Amino acid sequence: MIHSGVRKLDEVIEQAWVVEFLMRFKALASKDRIVIFQRKDHIETLGALGILPHQAEETILGLTLEDYTKVQEKARETERKSASSEHA
Image (cartoon, rainbow, N blue to C red; front, side):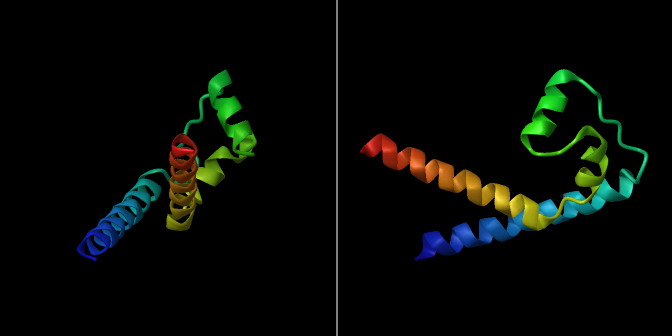
């Protein structure tokens, strides 16, 4: 029971850090101040995420805590699947 309370507190602290980071980043990186280098690996990564190069700046400035949370949930799900397949 205590373990789950500590884990929940860790999640709240992590989310607060993400919100603070996003606020500070967006304040510093106002429109037209982000440079997306058109390197092949960057373009491939954006493509894998379904983002066209001209959409990258808007996408980055539009990131939210919910976006971060979705990625974390997917990572946890992948870890659970990986752990269960290792034990099978």
